[in-house]
Length: 119
Image (cartoon, rainbow, N blue to C red):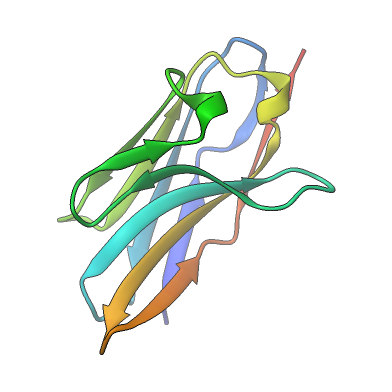
């Protein structure tokens, strides 16, 4: 029922750009936070960019100045504009959303989309 569907991944050369998008559906509560995570082979999943329910943003230090997260609350979508991509950005990128229900956090994840940056 609940789905977070990502799009926009692919293969790009170093220095190029990609825009990832995620659409949430089937969530019967107001979404609080939305974010993008990524996971490279053999590595733990890490938070890349966060857009909080209060309207603030936070970024992984290594992507500051290169990536921009945006959100459309009316459409329940979140996007990640990625510029000046580097090979170390190669990973599976996951959309994330959470809601608060009776003071309990419910977390939802997209299926992931592959981003590969060639040197």
